[in-house]
Image (cartoon, rainbow, N blue to C red):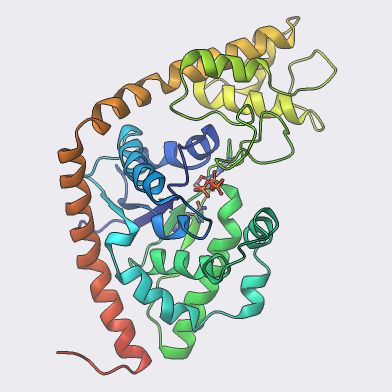
Length: 332
Ligand code: ATP
Ligand code: LTN
């Protein structure tokens, strides 16, 4: 790999990506391939911190891999792999768990949210989720981690774990920085614009899936919750409209002032229809490319096999050095 800064990011294969995953994270990943060395991963081990049906999970993992490619990640330019194919992540996770405090993990909002959502299955994996995430990043000594704003707290914990390890065993890990793009860092639910749009929302009208067809997308936007005014403008308190304006701005490239001018004197109905159509048109090439890729299982397998080999080549060296540093006996 050339001497450029290293980017690492991952996404859980817990379902089809939402417009939130796309705008807040994945759409930013492809352009980064030009300026950085990039490593992207389908975080299947993280996905089982919440109950998954095995056959469905296997399908979601492959779909997620193909979707990342459909969103422009080129497996020749970047390392694109499936987390469980690199056992080094689980190995490093153990060492990092032993350098992570109970108190730190208890403060994670994602843990609190997910324990509330699944009170019958507050498992140890869900609790130590951030330590595995730190292992993902630190196994490659990544400099930058592009994520949506909801992952910032996890990244800060990754930095703290790396810092603690460095203090205890001597400087080794690079301290990773979050890389968060301002516009669209948090896309909100279409049904409750105070909540983030999430794959696991029970209400199908709350989120746009990036493989939804045009009619479905337009229908969901038509039903989006807004407010009782009739003015398309970005203002505090207008959560629903602010969210739609952000989405429209990202997919059309227009700024808020020109959006306000475009819809001056028009009602929310016109605006919602325009947002729906713009989003559907923007996602059309992703849908087409996904259909092509998912039909070619042999090519996908070739890509993820090579991705795993390349990921292992780097992370095996990290784990060997870490094992040595903590005082384990070298096996060669
Ligand atoms: P789940 O519902 O299973 O918890 P999720 O939809 O929250 O999943 P993740 O797999 O946890 O998605 O996140 C993948 C990436 O998408 C992360 O970088 C995360 O920050 C980003 N992301 C998720 N939801 C949003 C959102 N609503 N707006 C912006 N970015 C988001
Ligand atoms: N927790 C992340 C997914 C994830 C991740 C990572 C992101 C797992 N490992 C490493 C960045 C770096 C999420 O998006 N929910």
